[in-house]
Length: 202
Image (tube, rainbow, N blue to C red; front, top):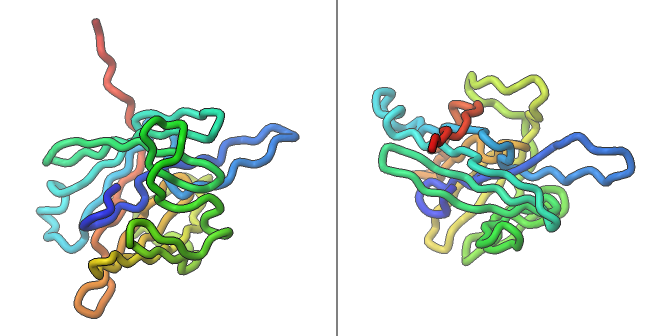
């Protein structure tokens, strides 16, 4: 997800995998992590006929547990093209990464959301607002999905203010932008599912 314009703070990783007896439970990370997980987002402010064409798809192209944490590659696709980003998850924190083994630019810190209430990244200030139960505007989640998420507010040095609702195993569910004295929804999760990578035959 992006840090300019409508921020998809989610950008994404996570896992509530089964734990073996005697091993510590893996910390929740509020981002996607399951290979093939595909999330689609729309801007509710657009006219209905324009929303589909402006959709952004985020897909977990690869996910790998490494000794230091977990590496996840996300591809972002729209009608304008495709891009990808590599993320690193460790101890509940989320980072961009160059190699998938070490943390780079901070998205949110280790210990998020209970062990950290505010932080700053390149002049953008973040703070945890609190927990809430997901209202996904008709989008259904699996029965096993965690529906309790966290609202995070952030403000850039240029004055852009947004609030993003993050869910475990998904990341961004909705982003609100402060505009003309009101919070308006500018990025909303509208589809969640799994897609396989295309098979290449040689």
